[in-house]
Length: 150
Image (cartoon, rainbow, N blue to C red; front, side, top):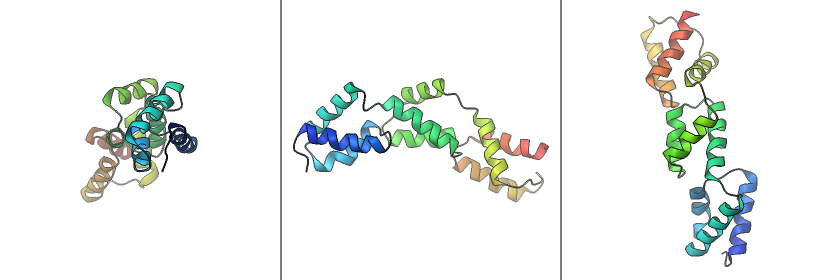
C-alpha cells in the first residue's frame, strides 16, 4: 500500500520506465494500492512534469500497432479502452499519417499466398481476417484486389 504521493509517483515512474502508459492505465494499475485522491494528485504532478503524456502514449501506441499489422478501427478501439479520446487519436494520425490501404496490402502479401478471386471461399476468409485486424471493408478489398492484379 502506497501511503504518500512520493511513493505513488515512484511506482508510476517505475511503470513508465518500462513503456508509455495512458493516464487511465496508470489509474487502473495503481488504484488498488493507494488512496484515490492521492493518486489523482500524483498523476496530475507527473503530467505537469512531463513524465505522463496521453499524446505521447497515443503516438507510440499507433506506431507500434500499425507496425504489427493492425488497422485503424482496431487501434482506435484499443485506445478508447485505454482512455484516449478522439482528438488525441486524430492528432496522432495528423503527426504520423499512415496509408492504411497500403498497410493492409502489405499484410495480405505477407500473410497469404496469391489466390484467384473466383475462389470465393478463400477470398471471403481473407476479407474476414483483414477486417478482424481492424481494416475497413474498402481497405481489405483494396488489399486483396491489388494482390489479384499481380
